[in-house]
Length: 125
Image (cartoon, rainbow, N blue to C red; front, side):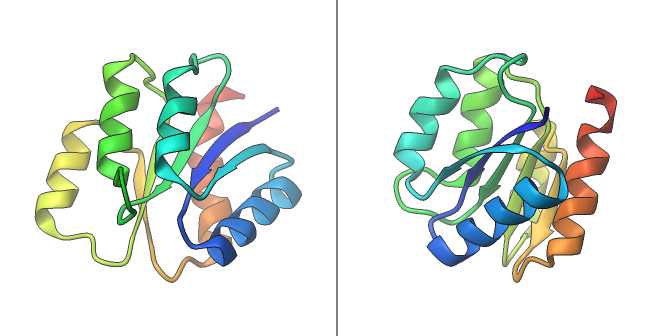
């Protein structure tokens, strides 16, 4: 079964992503609206315990790129999708360097979320 950490400070968006992944992909979702709690959670994970991270870029405390760095520094080489309303060149280059699996533009289309999540985790099945 697919296990996904979703980090998004907007509660409506977080709920929408969570329900979509649970119903469309039968995923176990670990939703976080606070990036500090998500960071603590990510530091405890292994490649076997978590299959995908989906994170908003702009959040209080830790942004998505910082969380991606935490994962990579810990050796979590799992797919990481970054959500951004403004994927500027500097962000894209930094994320690509850290092997980001992809970007989701805000406002998020749930069909795109499901398709992209399925695509980047296909090798896990």
